[in-house]
Amino acid sequence: MKIEAVELRVVRLPLVTAFRTSQSSQDDRVALLVRAQTTDGEGWADCAVGEAPSYEPEFLSGARAVMAEYLVPMLVAAPVVSAARVHPVLAPVKGHQMAKAALETAILDAELRARQMSFAQYLGAVRDRVPAGVSVGIPGSLAELIGQVEGYLEQGYRRIKVKIEPGWDVEPIRAIRERFGQDLALQADANGAYTPASAPRLRALDEFGLLLLEQPLAAGDLLGHADLARLLTTPICLDESITSPLAAATALRLGACSVVNIKPARVGGYLAARAVHDLCAAHGIPVWCGGMLETGVGRAANLALAALENFTLPGDISATARYFAEDITPPFVLDDGHIAVPTGPGTGVDVLPDVLDRLTTHREVLS
Ligand code: SMG
Ligand code: MG
Image (cartoon, rainbow, N blue to C red; front, side, top):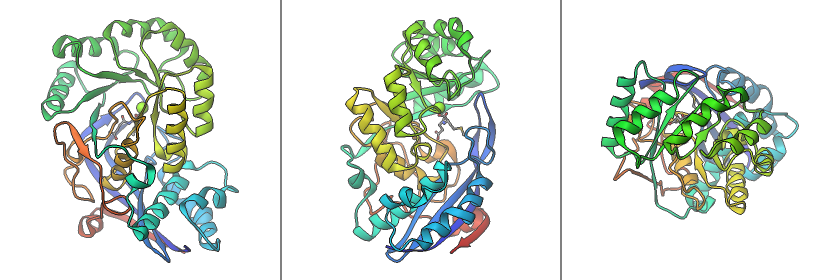
């Protein structure tokens, strides 16, 4: 396969509910979509960068620039490209894992469509539907939080994740436990908002029987997480720290976590995500699939990944209606608290060209 051109599209999708974490707040998802045009046909990906570098160092216009100036010219110049060759070909460029992941994913989508094989088959999925979790941002009040959680549980979500930060931690978790009981599958995500000095505060969460506490400390603080894991009974899960299979191996060796949130984009794509999954499985560490408010294009691929054997916890893959009134693909719906894994070739979803055009704010073709 050869790469002929890559089309980049920026689309703006208003969120149905503003999403605030300890690090950032957003009313819409500004998505960077990548379409790889190859000699074997085309493939699509949703580059998981944010509009600003407030969650990850990579961000939208940076990803566009590195693709336009370096990554796409290198891929177009390569005599033969396959998804597995993308990282080796792009190795002279340091970092920019999310941009590289998007290119790898679009090329993998093209490759699999040409072979009439789904992402799920290719990755080794063992289930045809996955339980859906939902991530609840930091709202304006406790009443608002309880109302949102109640609504999600009525819809059938199998697990609730609450965003926390200093000043919004023990009280909201206690309020949810009091209202919905001990059996609710509940977890908290701090997005690195605490320091090792907050250990006593975080220990106060132990009494609530959380499934896990996600990324309490800074991404680089693996030793701090290892120390914290020894102080808390709540299992520590890492998200931002898991930047590659190597980072995952280091975290496991240090005892920095006992659960891993895999974000395919951050580790460099679905091939690396599968490697992290396999590594964790070999160590008896359960994993789940994280979310980046993806459009249907990104969520379709995440569903395939989440269908692998060691994804034993519900992920942040919610129904389309939790994110957008209108998506650029047909909507994913909740059925008995689960979402079906797409079965068609490639990601198994096709973009809706009219909606895509209407929501596009920028388009460029690189060749
Ligand atoms: O896609 O449902 C989703 C969002 C899940 O909470 C979510 N993601 O740290 O896990 C996380 C956050 C990162 C997204 S911030 C833009
Ligand atoms: Mg997280």
